[in-house]
Length: 267
Image (cartoon, rainbow, N blue to C red):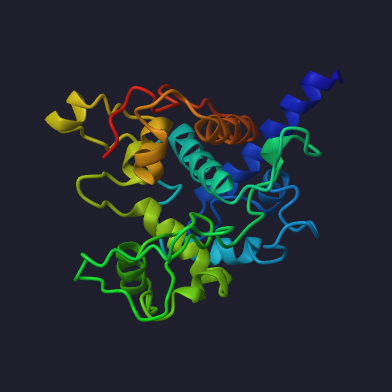
């Protein structure tokens, strides 16, 4: 078999294994084989999150979010999971341009923000007041940040996000759950990342005026649009896209349109 055909066959086999699993009630949305082929280096000694982001913890966390990876057509389901894994890979990347197996094989290398510039406390948010001495820096697969995210995430998932934010980088299952909570939860005026990727995003007049078109780029806008969107495409955006393109190929699905957010106004 030629190299190119062999790669296509492997991608199809991995994607087929994912479909067989995700089609069965109560089964994982991603097979262990596919998970391991995506995160080739997450447990390397060089990664501070070595052995933290386990496959079993991921599967356990997804069971609390039944619509994740199970909404829409087969292609839609594959694309959503690939997009989620791509976004968290960028947030936790340990890759570089000449990294072994390429820059997009090093997702889930970190579990905490490196050298945080602040404690991410918004004192004006009285609904979710910061606890004394606590930092709400980026933690977990989605790098959950700010008191106004830790508070509601903790309430939804059953932990004290304001007084014990450290649990997000100490408990693997909770860490995964915070990423999935962020992905699945609508935070007005932002839609949920899930709804964007499964075709349930209905843009408002303001969204249309801001050119917030559905696609992977809008998900980037939801996650970090204030820094990365509405400006010439940055290295960060290209990194997110690079991960998505690699993962979409492994899932044997197209990425869809609107990958960047250069011409979108951020929220």
